[in-house]
Every structure is written in structure tokens, then in C-alpha cells.
Length: 283
Ligand SMILES: [Zn+2]
Image (cartoon, rainbow, N blue to C red; front, side, top):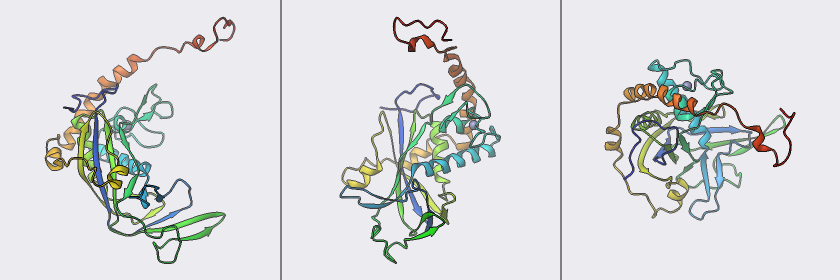
């Protein structure tokens, strides 16, 4: 029986909370893209999948992180922690999503790995005629903007996306914070998406010693479903979100003390040179 961690741990204990998330578009989403990485449809070779709309995990994660920080600020916990170069690496949000000390204005000497893992969200239904570029198929057409080829794509409202969000080595508090904010995810996309109102809900969960749920498999093989767990009573058993933030915040000083304490003072450069070679004068 796998359980939540009692308190946050820097070393992995091999516990995964997987949340199966559904995101429904409430409006048509118009996506303009001229960046190769902004792929919003994908052709899967798998028989049961074929052409799907997708939302890259990077986009969902970015939005979720923003929401987690926003709510944290509303409780006045590390209100100056901010994305880009101003991560504090000393707050619940940084603990959950990670950060690099060196590039942060906090100039701390450690990095934090993200505990929130995810994968591409995939639409539950196939996209018809995506490859044909015909007039009405999905309202897709190419426009030339300067030298770049821009794609304009309409994702029809009520399109349902499925994704799995995993919290690695979760405590109940971490789960409470992430779940609360996933449910507050009511708009997706950044500069390239207009009118992206969504409704996001958690439809299943699994606490396990491995990451074994994937949307790719869920959508491809409907018979191989994970057992349905009672999400509502699971969420009801978690601490309230405000309590969760403050408990997590209070656990951080002790956790980071461990982190800083474990760092060795300096790397031994000699270990990199070949045996027998003199290292004299190299340093
Ligand atoms: Zn922070």
C-alpha cells in the first residue's frame, strides 16, 4: 500500500500521485502559430489515435505554475517570487516546480527539480481532415506573414483533452495545492491562443510506486482502463488549500538546510585526468 510522504523529501522515495485530468474547451480556440514547437495537432501512428489536437505539457505546466504562484501570493507567502529570473527557490511553488539557483536573482547555490511532471494533453476525438488543408475541414489555412509561414487553426468548442499530471514524492499538502490549482485552470494558452476558456477537472487518480498511467495508452486502448477511484472523497480527505500552502511553507527551511548541508565544498578536478598524468600546474 503506497502512501503520501509525511513531509517533503529531497531524495526521491519513489511515490507517484497520478491525476487524470480532463480539460474541455468552452469556446472555439483560435490558434495562430509560426513556431515549429507550437505544434497543436499531431499525427499518431497508433490505429486508435491518428490525428489529434494536442496541448503541449509545457503550456499546461506554465499556466499551472502561474496559478500556484498567484494563489501563494494571495496568502502572502514569498510574494516576491516571480517567474523568469526572480524565482526565490524557497517557497511552495518553487519546491513544486523547481528552479535553477544560479540563474535566479536569489543567487542561491542549489537547484530544485520539478516534482510536477506531465505529458502532452491529447484530444479525446480525432481531428477530421487535418492534413488536407481544405476550406472548412477544421478552419485551417496558411497565411504568409513576413517570411514565416503562419498556421491559423480553430479548435472547436467542447473539444475534450485528456492529460495526466504526476506529482513525484507527494505529501498531502502538495496534492492539495496542485489539485486546487488544476481546478482553477480556466484558460489555456499564451500569446498564440485567443479565447481559450476551458473547464478543467480531475476524473481519476492513482497513488503508486510507479508512473504507469499515460494518456497515450488511455485513449488508444479503452479496455485497458485504470480502476476508477473516488476522486471526490480523495480530495475531501486532503488538507484545505490555505493550510496546505502554509504547512508546506513551514517545512521548507528544514528541507533546504539538508540541501545546503549535503553539498561538498569543491569538486575534485584531479579525478577527471588520466591515471599517471601529472596535474601539477594545471590549477
Ligand atoms: Zn519561489
